[in-house]
Image (cartoon, rainbow, N blue to C red; front, top):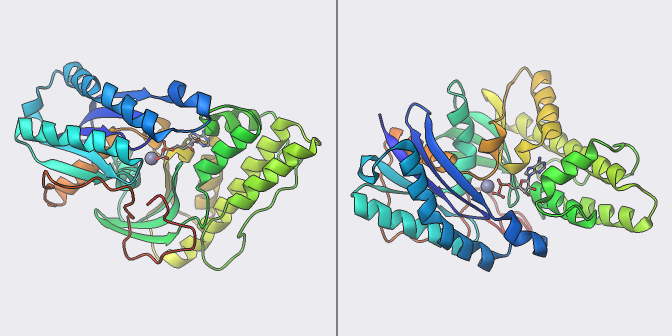
Length: 345
Ligand code: KG4
Ligand code: ZN
């Protein structure tokens, strides 16, 4: 039974986890840095990198102790090697290299997006390839056909902001603090989603790409008009965003060919209304709907360990100790570049 130590440090969560081939998370720990970034209303890369450097090693020690596993009992050390904030990625990757060397085990340099893309299979053993994936996080908004381990076809991306970013900016505009997604979701429950007329960028367009910057500007104008209650703006924003997601996902599904399921992953997949809307869409197409539990949606190390286990099971080799951290790293290197897109990988 293979056992992999996973490390995640690409944004503002420092995380370590021990996961087995048969999908047991033996131990995991996540140190959030929300308190350090909150005064700035967003993640400050330099602060994030320093916090990872302080916290990661004791966190790894903690999960090993919790699971009562010695370092040389793991079969590989997997760490996010990109895309992400480069200082943080380097802390995680260099730590993993040292642990791999000390334990004489292979290093697995994992694409963070691959972690999100395969995380639904950690939660759901019945989920088979190929599946349609809506990957919605703070840095990414993509529709992919997940065809196998290492085989990812991108059908759409955002031409400007990621969906999580739009949630975070809306929260900032409404003075809800950081991180914004959960705060917008909470406030939206108290508002009327029809109260504020907001645009649905790219709705109905032929390519299934996303755009959220116009929506964000409209939220700013709505606030500045002084005509609307914050809860109504939050609810109307969330409704508009969901309308865009449903339209774009339907379009991509038409282009993808056969898939076993519609799957959502990434931080925004923690949003209950987003999940419910996608579940209904899957229902209209007789597709199974899969969403990982919330703790596996936002950044975590179990998904990185799991991606490592999937790579080992697929017979893919480990990575050399001189492998570089990558600020950008597209999941589908063949995908066309789209104006404004791919900025974060
Ligand atoms: O996947 P993730 O943890 O980090 C990245 O790889 O970016 O995603 C974080 C993003 C943030 O933008 C956060 O506001 C958003 O996911 N998010 C949510 C919710 N929980 C987290 N957005 C909407 N509703 C939520 N409940
Ligand atoms: Zn992420």
